[in-house]
Length: 177
Image (cartoon, rainbow, N blue to C red; front, side, top):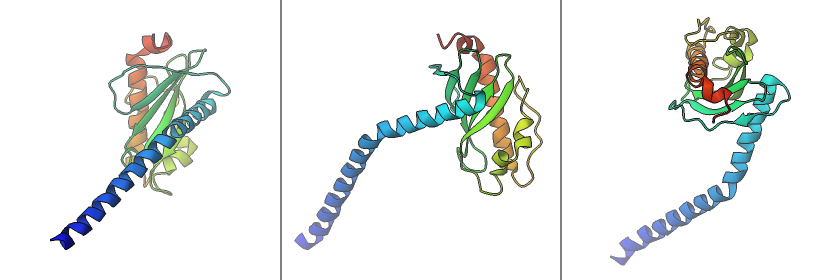
């Protein structure tokens, strides 16, 4: 009987030790990870609008795809959307919306789509430019050949950003107050 219990006890002890080490590693790195995400977000905002200050807003939109919303002092808005393309949550973009409520730029925070296929939505500037100037959801889509799911994911990201902007425009313009 003892011979049957010993392997289970050793395995349990190993699992508990591994779990404790994972918790410790998470606690030690979570602030660093949050700081890196903030730096990446700010870098993407700068690539959208140039060197500018931006302030993250605390607005509950009810949209699961919305990661963050930031506004600049001159009224430009960056909406971070993470949505599905071919990969689950494979498209993480900042959609820049100018002070007139039109899409003025799209910057990728990360892209988990298939290299050489789905990544074309990032690599072909003309694809992104088709969304520029749109001020209402349901933007017409000219999909990239071989990247249909990724193209539809990009369209969904832009549509979601415009929906949120239009639905929460007053709160966004007033700085989330």
